[in-house]
Amino acid sequence: QVQLVESGGGLVQAGGSLRLSCAVSGSAFSVNTMGWYRQAAGKQRELVATSTSAGTTTNYADSVKGRFTISRDNAKNTVYLQMDSLKPEDTAVYYCNRVPQWNHYWGQGTQVTVSS
Image (cartoon, rainbow, N blue to C red):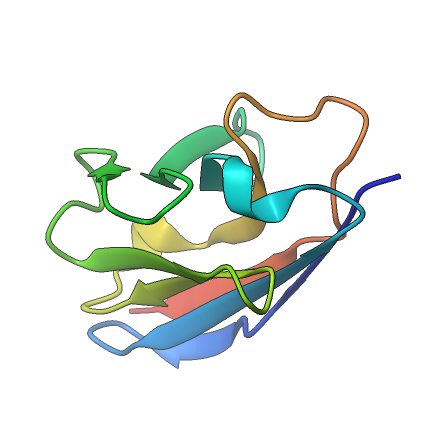
């Protein structure tokens, strides 16, 4: 059984930064492409950043490109999301998951709130 535990969210002013972490257990973490997803209130969950298994290739949604950086430490089974120049529209619950996602395994997410 896969467990995903996200942390690092919080309340920050526009222009600020946060670093999210996601610890993954119960899977062959190092062979999976991992991603960060987010879901704002009343909206569908969206994929914002991905990292291939070795971390050599990353991709970003246009809305976060140039501001967010995904990274991973396969020795720690952990994926990170560095978020800079945050905007109010980045406010959401952030989740990590495999890409494509494990439909039956989601963590509790971590709330990010950006005030204007």
